[in-house]
Amino acid sequence: MNAQARSLSRRLLLSRSAAVVGASSAGLLLPQIVRAQGSRIKVGFMLPYTGTFAQLGVAIENGVRMAIAEKGGKLGGREIEWVKVDDESEPSKGVENASKLVQRDKVDVLIGTVHSGVQMGIQKVARDSGVLNIIPNAGVHASTRALCAPNVFRTSFTNSQPTLALGKPMVDKGLKKAVWITWKYAAGDEAFEGFKDSYTKAGGTIVKELGLPFPNVEFQALLTEIAALKPDAVACFFAGAGAAKFMKDYAAAGLQGKIPLYGSGFLTEGVIEATGPAAEGVITTMHYADSLELPRNKQFRTAYAKEFKMQPDVYAVQGYDSGQLLVQGLAAVGGDIGNKAALYKAMESASIDSPRGKWTMSKAHNPVQDIYLRVVEKGDNKVIGVAAKALADSGAGCKLG
Ligand code: PHB
Image (spheres, rainbow, N blue to C red):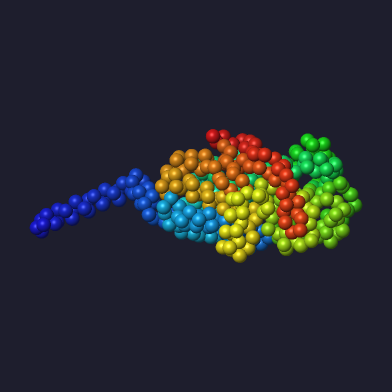
């Protein structure tokens, strides 16, 4: 090639790349191509790593990482860059923390969170920005009801799902007068909605509703009140370290074995060992149990224990299923997270082969799943029945699908 030809081909090259840059700045060409082919996909965890729900956040992150690692450690063929924010289960920082991940870190996917109040902040940021949000725990109704969104998917439950299956087994045992106790925030209040509905429909009467602010664990005065009320049973929502403290205080107040203790299964998840004998006999409803006799569950539990040197719980399962959902969704679009219509369609129609049993997504993007009845026996959540089959949340007010 002579000097003139070289100069021509250089000018051509420059003008072509200028055209590509032009097209890209107009949002036409380059971003999708570059993103779909090889650049790393950015996944942000917004979870509690401190406070009463710290161990829940860790279990979720472990589960997500494990599901993706089992499929080669990539999403739709793309390497992953991970980022993390500790949300401290602090609702007042919810929007700020979610914005950090979306605006500053420019995550492609936001996985979070545990606490319903914090989720409301994420929900706002997800709806405003359009970022893909996978909720690996927080059960706040609005996320998959009135504030549902095409880009928000939940792999866990709604707050009333487990307790919708709780009332009947209590009344079936002849326990017709109950006291309800919880932390007073969205998760506790909405768990109460499910309990009230199922217990009163089955013929039970709620004699008193007790509560204390999250994450307060000064249960003494309330337990004294329960002892004086002498109900047939107590039902509750507590979780994490606070749940262990509640069961210990319940036993120390002399109520264990006298007034049967029921709850949504979070009460005993991941805390049976820390609670010790005070957890024995506690009966709960939940979409998972350690002892589920499913090959998928056994395989999952063995692999998790080997990898993380601890036992998995429902939070680890929900994280694992979040990872599975992402793997399936991004495989369907070859890693092109910008292809939203196809991505969401694949995620909506996903069938998740979970350690909890297979489940599907409702139109509002919440799991349709079985709820198990469990009792703590010799330090284990033993399954004593299926309390509800393929239970779906109402999705009231959601216009998706
Ligand atoms: C919630 O705030 O939605 C929440 C927190 C912990 C749980 C369950 C629900 O175990």
